[in-house]
Length: 122
Image (cartoon, rainbow, N blue to C red; front, side, top):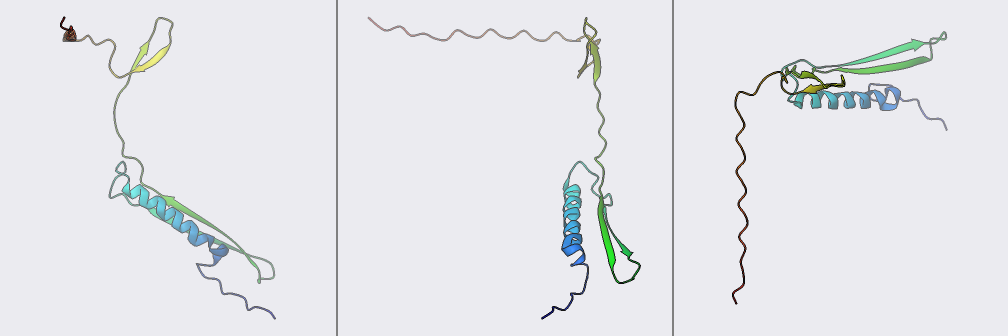
């Protein structure tokens, strides 16, 4: 008893791997849309490419697919760091310019009050 061959459609290409790949890329695109670090209205695309390579007998066809997502890039953010160098020549990054003098003297901390001690009555 022989089985009839199944017709191929988008759901059965590569045993369903094409549809599964699309679902994975769609999840990536949705996560990218939800990311507040990306532009909200930027276009995102999912590209499916199915390549069919027939054999000489024109009966057998090898297939290969790719599924790619083009996501929105991270919104550019600016900032700055300052370069510092110690006496040994080692470089390091700082959050403010080490050449800048403080305009105000930081306040001196208040002395901490001594804790109260209780003595027992005689």
